[in-house]
Length: 353
Image: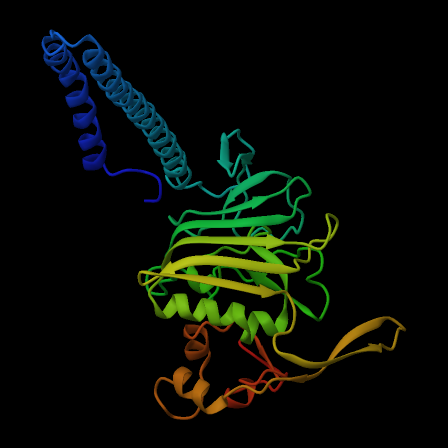
């Protein structure tokens, strides 16, 4: 526990301090009896030596008392912070509706956030500044927090509970809602309406859980791998996502840093909001003259290993249900490595729309 002592250790220190206090008068009594002597010079030297020893004892007594008092104060401060953190994760679940009642505040890392209600399927892309919204579906309690510029900067959950298709209402694609929030930036081809906490993990689709996320990262990169891992692990605890931006005007994040505990192990994810493992990139001009970033080459995926993990019945064909269970978000487009192993019934270049 670093500089904090165990209760047993503090008890031993207190006992030692009490012993020193009780022993001081007894020491003085013995010392005074020994002062009766016919050798004044010798007694004077003994007095000097004995009082020097007594001074050391008193100094040590004062140091022990000061140290013990300081440690007790620090322990009280830690317990107070723990109680504050406990309040954070025990705030009652917010019923999602369109009302604007004063629901109080939530404090995190020294900042105050106004708790507001936003429907889980609200597609509006704008967010309020310094707001806290419960983004957990049903009884789950997940929090999305914004900064003073309306950017989604924190997503917190004491416990991530995966989706339960048997007891929860989802559509054919395994989603709670048919559409996600149109956060500025998601209208471009490069970025998906990316969930910070996925549908498969109990996250809703409003702007307090959606950011413009690189489509490859979202569907088959680090984000997809993280969702898949948490799903396979039956959920996780202590989920904290920190989302950063290149400036205060954009709603497109530059980086995601996520920590959580999975099966007793602390996991740390840290990835930029860009196409993962890009070998070559080039800037090209589109038909309307705008410059766009084109991905020339992406590191190959070990298809055989991936398919074996996703295709649970081993028939070589991946169903929408199997892909969804593996953490992939629908739809799967024709440029995705998984597309050739799925059935596109209407031949429109996407599966699971």
